Structures are given as C-alpha cells and as structure tokens.
Image (cartoon, rainbow, N blue to C red):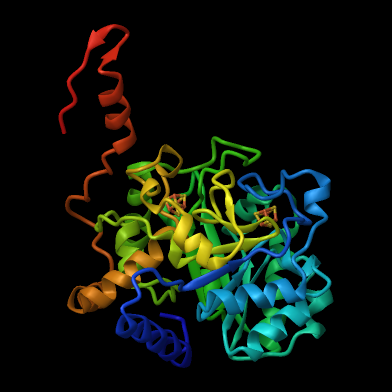
Length: 369
Ligand code: SF4
Ligand code: SF4
C-alpha cells in the first residue's frame, strides 16, 4: 500500500466514527469536478463533449469549499476536465488543505511545469498524474504525440520538489498483462508513491466506443497482471479487496454514495460516470433522493460492465470493516489469480423486462433463474 500511515490513520478514524454513529451511507472520497474544459481530447473521455458554454463554466472557490464542507469526506479527488486550467485552483487546493482533507489533483500534467510554483508540498496534497501506459500506449490513448514525455518530465519535477505523486492508469482494449507490468515497473522507478489502475468505463459519450474491455476479459487481464505482480513490489493505491474484486474473486454491489460527485450542474446522481441521471441541489438531497437500488452492474444496463473504483472501492472498504480477517488474508496472499471466478452478475433488468412482456414476438416466455 502506497498511502502514508498518517493518511491511513485519518481515514481509518473517520470510518470508525461513521460506524460508531451508525451511519449507513457515508462518503469516502468527494469527486470535485470544477470544470469540464480540457487541453486534451482522449479517445476514452466522457467529459469533454459538452457545448462551449458548458465547457466555459467553472465552480468557484466558494462553491468548491461549500461542497467539501457539505460532504465531509476525508479525501477529495479533483478530476476534470483539466483542473490546472482553473484560475482559482491554487486557492481551492489551499482551502481543502486548510480543512485537513487529503486532496488528489488529477492532471494530464501538460501545464504542471508552468504551474508548479503555485503549489507547496504538503502531506495533504498529491498530484495524481494521468498515464495510461508506456510512451506508445499513452500517446495513443490521449490522441497526441509527446504527452508521455511531458508527463514523465513533470513527475520527475514534482518528485524532486518533494510533492506526493501518484499515477492513475486506465486500461483499455489490447492491453496485455506484460504491457501493464512493464509500465508499473517503470512508474515505480520514477519514485512515485503509488499507482491506481482501473478498467476504462464505457462512456456513451466517449469519442471511441471499441476501446473498452468488458466482462471476463477485464478480470482475466487483472489476474494476469497480479500473477506477474507476485514477484514485484508495486505500490497500488487500492484496498486489497478491491484488487481481489478486479481479479474476479468478489461478488460486490456498487455503493456509489461512497464517491459522490459535485460538478457545475450540482450533485450528480448516482456517480460521476453516468451523466444523464439527474442532479441534486445538496449532498443531503443526493443521499435522500437518489434511487440507489436502480444502479449497479446487475441492476442497470448502463452499469453492466462497470468495475470502477468510484462504485466498488467503497464497497471493498466496507467489506474490509465487516470482515477484517478476510481482508488480512487478501493482504497477505494478494489477489487470487487461479481457480473459478465469481459468476457474472445476473442482469435483473432483462428478467424484469421479460417478466413484464410475457412474450417475445408473440411467443410466450417463462423466466427462470
Ligand atoms: S486528460 Fe482527462 S479530462 Fe482531458 S480529455 Fe483526457 S480523459 Fe478527458
Ligand atoms: S456501477 Fe456504480 S459506479 Fe459504475 S456506473 Fe453504475 S452507479 Fe456508477
């Protein structure tokens, strides 16, 4: 685990307080999206196809601080768009640090060299640099040559200046366990604190649709990566049970309230991946009015292939609290890479639709599990 002990203790005591208070739905990481504008146009991005007037909008410093205070999560992730485009970003970061929240500023790093003097190293601040693989893979993923080299240069600069640095890597079609292993080896050599890896979510709005990995292929890819990882010392910034879930060993339901999203439209229902499900005007309204039972990989066709950390990391953390022995074993042994996987989720929406229709093309159907 790459996360420093100080942060682990702070998050652990927050979780304990939620348990003692009997809170059932609590936020773990606030996803704060203060703008959608970006200086790249990646093939798998679901954020940048808004009209110009939307791309020109920003959450103000005051709106960001209100979101942090309302939500109360111990960690804040700032994705985008590209946060470094936002003129008030240094102020926003300082405001979050002043509240003793751990903030991850997610950036493609193109502006980092130019803007780095606006920031001061802090145990509360991490630059989370977008890198989807080695040079060829990353430049193809962001649809621009030279971005990998600039990101690596920025990582070295941040590490040299004493900043906490992680890389966030999204995996797409065509990736092999060997490719990812080579990349993780390289990333660790750069002196980063840790890496997050997750399968790309098949955004309906993404410019390219044939790049996403699906179903068992995702789990097989992660098993291959973790098999190689048994002999390596990679620091992955995920809970051990989330990694076990990625390897197809845990049957988890999505708990998207663990990673609530605030952007220029309001509090996004149910998570930052689904753009058309509506918005709430406050965090409490989001908790109270979102039909949470309608989401998750067995409950909604839009969620069918999703294994994203914003839906399942909080589930894994809750499972860790409920079953500490299981979590300890997963931590000691690492994710299981052989043997049967958990069954693919049964799509409830299909059976419900069929039950309602009773016939297909005039032929009677009986639905059995
Ligand atoms: S860098 Fe991030 S926000 Fe910008 S286009 Fe790529 S995926 Fe989208
Ligand atoms: S499964 Fe959860 S995290 Fe994934 S898209 Fe659906 S609601 Fe969002």
